[in-house]
Image (tube, rainbow, N blue to C red; front, side, top):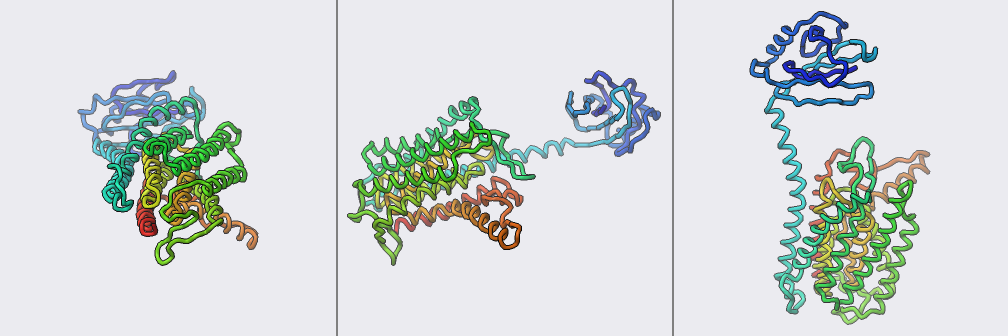
Length: 490
């Protein structure tokens, strides 16, 4: 039997076998070793001890409660603690009827110490919302700045707020849709198990709703098609590729949810399907009459002195490779709250600026998808309430690859995806190094504590918001560089 006595003034017992008498309570001290059952004590001595430890007569109205624990450590009652807290615990190995041995501890906590705990929560909320506000400010200023110079780049009159309008429309619609979709999926128990990394627990709840791509990807695609008035063949092709990749991810998520071992599509089957979609898109691209300022297709614009590079049939192979790789790159970054969505939003804005001189309609598509990613971030920020799943990550990768394939801007996409490439490279390096050391020394060794790299940083002691913030800063610099290279290359 175990009791915990809180402040000796008024007593509220919530156990069938409370103290028989206050006379059996031993003298109070700061840390008292075990004493034998039945030793004489006095309540007056307790009061004197309380005054000696700083408890005044004004504390007589403090509430006192007794906590009772059985052998399974169930807490039957937990009372309120006032300025002073005294804990009295009784442990017994002889059953409920025995008085057992006593162990007495006094814990003091001032009001200032209690109030000092509140700023921590506020600081966490500031960090939680500050990351998203900073990202919103950066993307908004960049898009508005580009809107003021877009007509000079395209050398044609453009509608006002050409890039910022699709961004904000998609962001608002996705944000509102999330408040309907997330509770619905949670009620249907479409949950994603959270990965546990050794001694470092994840800050999410044990399970969160998944398949978030079902509500933000269609909105981003629909807004782009509507604003281009269903007349852009490039936007329609990119939208079809995005939906096809989303369907692959949906199948993978569905199989992982309803299988016993949470195993989705086999890796080889998934790569085969992605390669098939990429090949079909490349073949369609070869026959479609897409707009190009150069009068011919299969070109890759590169900075001076390289200029335009014609790949011919190799362009089709590069297109298929980018479709397969980009889907898995975004998927590799989807491990922390807000990481994949924020990086994808920055990459979409960079591509929207890079393709502006070649195909302005694709810029609308990129800005719309960036807004959809940001709207999703409001539900996927730190302590996420929903995850995008493979439905969202594969769709984002397919959309980025489609933008690059329709414009030839493979190099800017490579630069803007630098963080995602680092994440995927850490997995490849880990596997190769482990296999090599196992063959040479008989025991495999690892460079990283775990992969992808963001989980290695978590196990190294960095907090999730700090990792995501660093990824945003690096991706912002890379996106600016990619946008600039795309403009000077075109």
